[in-house]
Image (cartoon, rainbow, N blue to C red; front, side, top):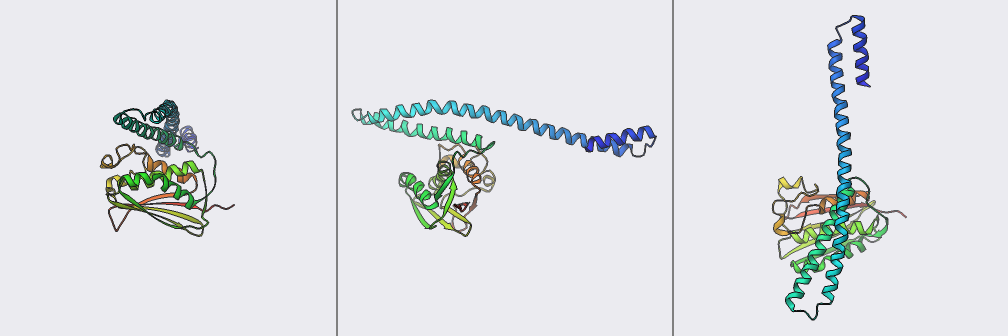
Length: 278
């Protein structure tokens, strides 16, 4: 409209012989034209981004299926490996572990790409917060033992229901707690607290790890970005866990934040979610 109005008044000024407003009108036309070009370019870029996301999504799906088949085959071989030499059994178990890690990475890439363009929750229901947290801690207990990290739990959340897609939320919570375990300087502790408020419930995860450099902090929620020393503690990471977790938590009306701990070199993550009403 700005562009059209300026053109109209320019033509009117030229026909009427009033040349005084010609320069500002031409300037206005240039500015409005520039804005139109910018808007057009941004729209075209968004369309290209959507096409690229769709292409990457198809690649992720194509990768997932053969890896699932490979995981099934390796699991079968592990079950049938009792008669094999110990060295071969160990290699099969390592292959099984690496395949699971690869499959989880492909899943996370696929979910991250989808979450950047649409909602990814399939079915949301009401769950008890403490029960979900306890389930994730139980799942990660072997990793904590292997890394010589003790998990300290403080649950103050009687009757703290949240409406979530359970499988997605467990992925988000697993990433945050897993990071706390992996990046804690061992032997060490990871503190997990669940605190119920009037309208929200907070899940707080504190580690006593390496912390994060100031230059890396601004990128922690950027997909595929990793800190300078990340490979020393998590060689399998691809830099999507925290970013994906934030996307998932946001989809349930929640908020994921991170801050450097004042009493140690570690980090504190907080997942804040609204309490569900029946």
